[in-house]
Length: 256
Image (tube, rainbow, N blue to C red; front, side, top):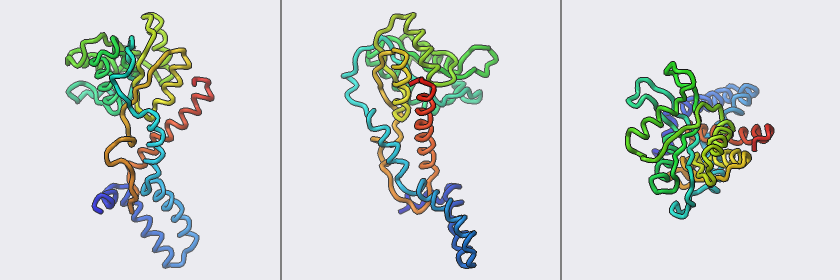
């Protein structure tokens, strides 16, 4: 019960509760039009943030990429982890902070440690704020990986890329130069469908290795009904619709 009422402490839950009070006040004052106008967004927020709809959609999208036996993965020439939400952060001890990128980087480093790939390739990133033109933010993570001893493999990165399609193009050039034949593709489970399709469109033979699961197989993420909308569920829906819209945009551009 305490878990169900926790969203009330979030700004979204508190605002929604005030919206409910507003609907009730308008109904008591017989202001039917105003009550109906406020009731529509109130019910929509309840549907999106109080029901397990978000978990159902995200879990279904992640399910096809649930990890199998890592030991059974084929030996690959390289393992590439696509760029995530890392960013340069001058006040952090490493000079950067990470979001989804953390899971992808740790996953690809573990694959290399297990001997599943000889080369570790970090995905593309944006321009660094270091003032050096052409220096990607991923170069900071590359330097940390090597200096920390987290991996002893050869590490490189894909440079500055605006999106997953750019990463596929950059990787194809690198693959052609190195003569790689088999590649392990590491990215978030929710992003894997689009990422795998983009890389295969470029003729890259990839084996998907998903990580950063948001719902599927995650303890306590199966979904429950809550009297108050949760910001976490709206965040899940944001990720879900980002991928769905991204898929159709990529399809329209003939990138997948």
